[in-house]
Image (cartoon, rainbow, N blue to C red; front, side, top):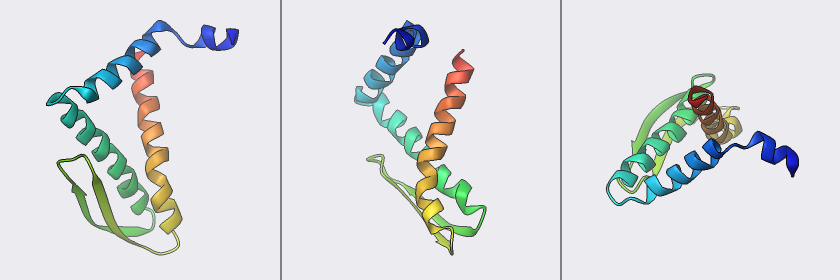
Length: 98
């Protein structure tokens, strides 16, 4: 527990709290959720560059999104890539904050 206290600063908790509050604000929160969906769908697109084609990307007003692509053996990687890409983008943002 002491290790976590040393590694996690108040700035970390501030930004987590700020993110939770921002997505709950009625008008502004919709835009933040859509940006998150675009980042998520771009993870699928990034993986499709390695073995397939992207046919379409759709982001809806309720912050849902879908990416249609033609993949062969990369289909599993195509589906899993968005979570890895989301984590990568979050790490980049954390590095930029420091």
